[in-house]
Image (cartoon, rainbow, N blue to C red; front, top):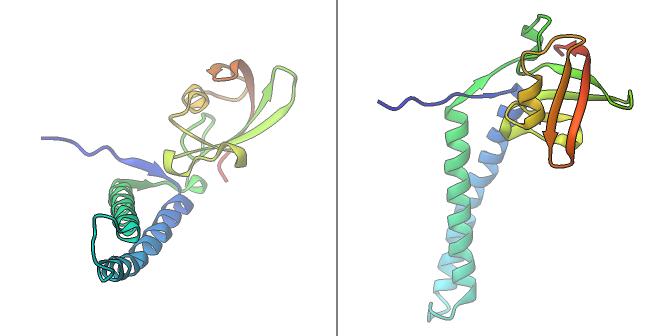
Length: 158
């Protein structure tokens, strides 16, 4: 029997996926209308509007299935309910790089990761290297830009 792998995510990530799902489901009838209108134009073999609408329908249905799968496997974690001295999913971590510059990241799920806003996936190279580390630990990670070294200077659950 196959086991379903849980997908950890924060409350905000879960709500964002739910919102995306609502938008996509609201688009369904509009696509059906576009397909019907394009069919009314006659010959489907050279009907660009029909083919574009059918392609969009496929994209929307695939996105809906993907989001519903993620939501069904969601394991919602609230970082404020966590504590401890080790880095775990949901922790916000302040690191010092080799130049003693401070960088701050929150460890989040894959669906909500956005490195530009300081949210990295627990599955990313840096995320995997940080999980389980404590205050003062040094972390070496290989990223596309090369090898990086960090020291854990702060762990928060906010």
